Image (cartoon, rainbow, N blue to C red; front, side, top):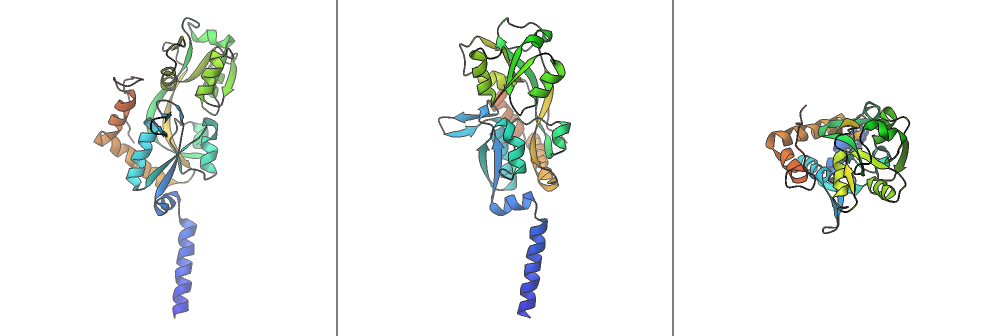
Length: 265
C-alpha cells in the first residue's frame, strides 16, 4: 500500500512539474529576476550612492514583485540582449524601456503599456531644423532598440551608427563619429543632465515616432502576464503609478514631462 502511495505521489509531482509555468517557478523560488537597463536614465541608471540600479523601471519592478509576494532581483542588460536573455531563461521578465511592436509580440508576451515614449534627436543646437536634413546625417542610436526601425522608415538615406548603449552613442557623437543621437526623448534628456556643458539639446520640434513601453515575458506565459497586468491596473487605481511617474518625470524631477496617459486594460 505504501509503495502505491509513493508511486502516486511521484506521478503527481511529475505531472505538476510538467505543467508548472513561470508564475509557479517565481513563487516557488521566492524571487523574480528582472532585466533592466543601467544606462537609460531615468528608466534605469546606476546610482553610485547605493551601488545599485534605480529608476522608473526599477520602481515598477519593485511594484510587480510586491504584487507577487517575492523578492525582486535586478539584472542590468544591454538593449540588444533584452529579448535573448529572457528567452534563454537568464531573467523572468524584462522591464527595460522595451517598446511593444508587432514583431516582438510574435516572440514575447507583453504587459499593458506603462509609458508612452516619443523618439527624437539630440544634436548641437542649431545643427538641424527639420526632419529631412537628417537624411544626409550619421545618426547614433542604441543597438537592439526600435530606433533602427524608426530611422529606416523615416530616413532611408541617413547613415545609422549603432552603439552598445545610449551612453556610448553620446560618446561617439562628442568624438565626431556621428551628427546626432536618436532615441526616446526622455532617455536623451536624462542622459544630457549628466552633460551640462555639452552644447547638445533634444530637438523637441522634430519627433521621429511614438511608441509604448511594456514589460516583456516569455511567449505563452499567460498567467504571469495576467498577474502583471492586474498589478499595473491596480497601481493606476491606487495612485502608485502616478507617484512613480511624479518621482521621475514630475515638475521637480531632472526630466519633467506631463503625464498624458493612463494605464488601462
